[in-house]
Length: 242
Image (cartoon, rainbow, N blue to C red; front, side, top):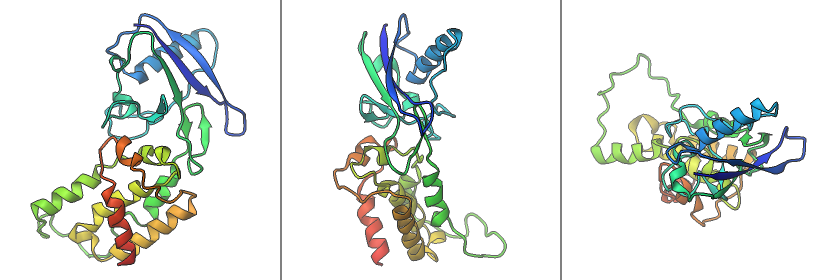
């Protein structure tokens, strides 16, 4: 198949950016979009040009590092899928795909499709952990957890921290990300001692990092690769009040 990639190119954060069009011919529809970018970069390098910068690691939808916008949608048109698992067979022959980085104040540009997402790491450092001293580590089965409770906690622990929720929110809010981290720990026995302070610290850090308020348009839920429910945002707000 043939495909045209309209890619945002920006050499550095302090330099202006622009879109470039690159046509790929005879590309297998069974390759992923990242593999198509690999092929394009081989061509650019062979021609003595700078390759397209994009971030990736696992290519299995686990690490969350590969995210960018595809035709204005975070991770592209397929639900519950990260960019690294998006295959060209999802698009028609001859299609033009516009690729651009996450757009958010808290995600400053690095180069091309790469942005700085360390603000998410700082949100975790603000309270997304358990630090209560317990002496010697207890046996893993010493604290019984009910099946429904464990299933609910795990449904939020699946967050991969890709930032799609931020990039899709009109206010660039990290509410779904923070809510998922709070709900993961707040539903388990190990997370109870710091439950209230954790909620306050992470939400205060969200404001300090420049993330906006929840816009309540549920776009975060729609683009989440793990399909984490936006209902947890309401749960997060109750945690702060509690």
